[in-house]
Length: 335
Image (cartoon, rainbow, N blue to C red; front, side, top):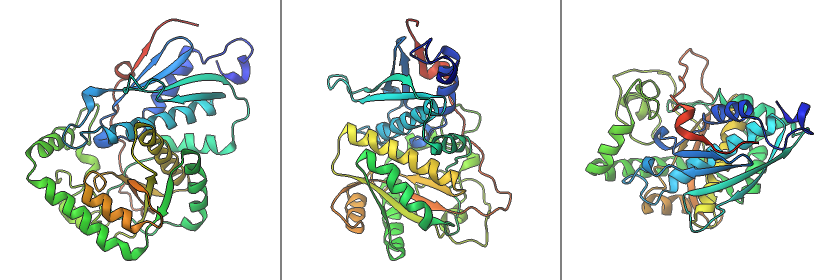
């Protein structure tokens, strides 16, 4: 049942629509593919909560990246429901006494959502995190105004770093990796979540890169290396580096960061571009300070995004696994 055909009969999506929307939206990106979200439908409203069991206590002790991940899922959810004819009136962080309760969604029919919504929904299943070298993004100047338009409602600044900043960012990325190298808790956490096949969460080996491949990218989190390979062997990384920044740090700002990140990733995917979102540089004060000095206006850097063109060479990035819907969604009451 959709709002198009049955708007007069119901005020919320029916159960099959709810399940289908959440199943697709669960393709949202998250730190280490932890998928740290829980949804609860009370018969009228859909509630988003964090899953505290998926907090990366060493990597992300404040839960910043966890909330950003949930923000990406929130934007995915709202985009999918819009495509199915439902407007989602969203109240963010509705109860300051419940920091795990990130959003409450109420529904009303929306028979004519913007045309770009459907394009971004189609991109959800196509989007991948591409850690391999990328060519310069084709049509970047055309898509940049659209990315800024999509992030503006979330009160984020989107800055494109100059090519001269790449060596400094690569050095900061390497420094972050070096500082973490001897952090036993961090390394244990990383090895738990990355490099294991046949799990419904985490970063599988098929989406990781070898040391030789990583060396040609330079800006990225150091994951457990996979066996030697030289995919895109002739390609040095020429991805553009984009920074999303806020005017401070708070749960609400982090949530908006995730929503804006989702919008940018889907818009890029729809335009045929490859992306890789990076939060490791902003985990540590030194990285944040460096990034803050590279963007034009005073702000708090939250996420770096590599945006480029993946060569059509058959080296397709496979999708990462997802948790069963029963693990992330609870329905109580009825309508």
